[in-house]
Image (cartoon, rainbow, N blue to C red; front, side, top):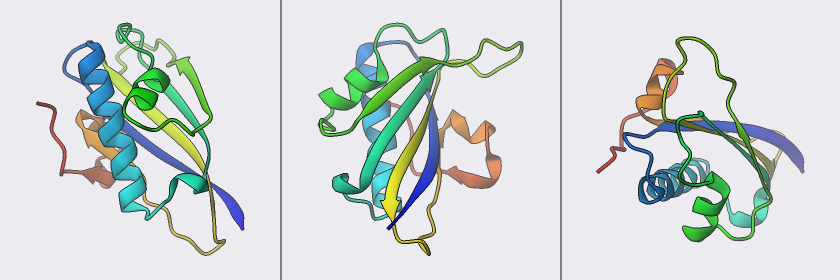
Length: 125
């Protein structure tokens, strides 16, 4: 087996614990589904969020959404002029075969980060 890194992101409309939990849940579910991953393949999950998201920690949101067995690390995204607002990014390390092709997931407004990789099947309610 090989360890590979997998990226993703989601942009929120509002800073509420409910919206953060829903967005993190959708992001993790979509990453796992799109890449046919099982929970035992996940080694670690790093979250970053922009400074305007303060109501909920994304690791707590992930646990609340049912992803309790992952090893999480959270940090604040760099505060750079003209950067995107209300953005949660994820970097996952996964155990997979060396020939596995992993697909990053960018949901909602996160398409602006990587328009070439935009996943259009998500919207915030």
